[in-house]
Length: 330
Figure 1 (tube, one colour):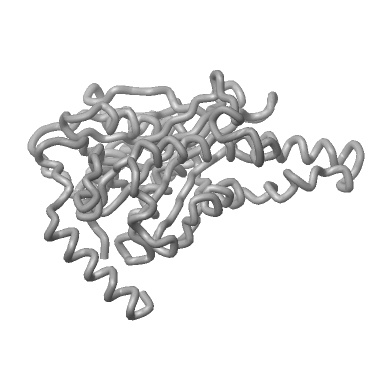
Figure 2 (spheres, one colour; figure 1 turned 180 degrees about the vertical axis):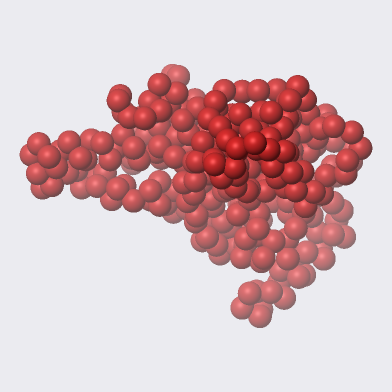
């Protein structure tokens, strides 16, 4: 069972100046949807950032992937709809037609890097990227795998689509490994992340007492994440002006830094990556919520003297446990 996970690699891609040939290579990527190109490039950067040996230290069957998105397929679906209505389904491109399924946006990643443990896609409004981290970590804790690449990717919405004016584009990828395994290969630690998702019904948020309910949900989500209340944590809140967003803002008051939410799930994960990349410092919370009621908090503990990555003895003990699990078919 793997419980203590360390972020060892961070990769970020923004659309400005992005060229898939430069980021990924001249062949084999031309017909991939842009959001898939973004996430592949972010993953490539995260793997390079994690350092040599991060993949090789874990068998392919024990590596997992999880990606969140809200709009990766929206523009592609819009183009497909126009083609079908204007000239017929026979004119759909065989190269892009399979991507009508949102699950395929992470499939190329799993194929390229032999991530055979699991490959999950999440699409909950605004929290999908954090859910990818949450569920991926849970799967590792349950023994489904012992290495994780997780993050979010988005593509701009077509003009006229709801939320098009606040479209997000780009990708963020994080590599997570067991602390003992990082110690064994002499890896670098960015720190730890822990996520909890929950739900605030819009009708409850808009009613009297909505802020109190939001505050209770925040406290209830942070408690299981292991936060020791030694003072108020810095909070970055990625919120919109919906009743749900306003309820959480009222619950947080002046203790939070507020970031306008985009139409997708990218910004919260980008804020987590930025907090990790900032190096040592106090733990902080990234919170986000959608108009539909989906919400999540991520406790980010950057690397530092008290975020050690384990000992050689721990690495050997984990390796022995892993070997026993494999002998037993686990």
